Image (spheres, one colour):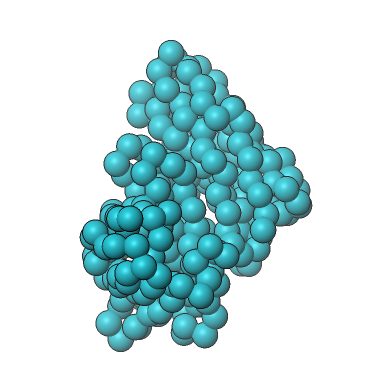
Length: 107
Length: 121
């Protein structure tokens, strides 16, 4: 199975900060990489797919980049509603594994 | 609007069985792959299984292979997860998700609210 790792596992930030989360795959997954946001008690929400394509309705402060094994999610100008847990997921090969998550909380 | 509503969760003893359902509406169900994803209490997301539009292809994570069966009824716009030989570690909220596709790329773009399965020892 393809293993996904994320760093950091958690971070504290302030409104307006630029936040970067890294995701790494145990083997090359080309561009088969999605990002999800999850808030407590809620279902995950798709933010970005195929590395860098924003899902409809997702604010442009979210962006994604990378290829192969290394990927990043950037939030440019953190907003109050962005405090949440973020997961990457590879869909290169089943099982479509998720990273362990990065919790973004208030500094 | 796209809606996915899971049901069938509950408390079951170790070794028992449970069948989860996911009722889909607001889109042409038969055109989409569908998935189940679970989340143990306080833990991250774990992809469990998915199924092709016609049910002809199914894939599972190793930890449930042979114990869980994913299926669908396109006439009823419903997705199912039959779970057997349940283990304490199967305790989780189970989400169903619609898998859209752009070219060869898969993305779970809509999710249900989840149903909680608790396996007691």
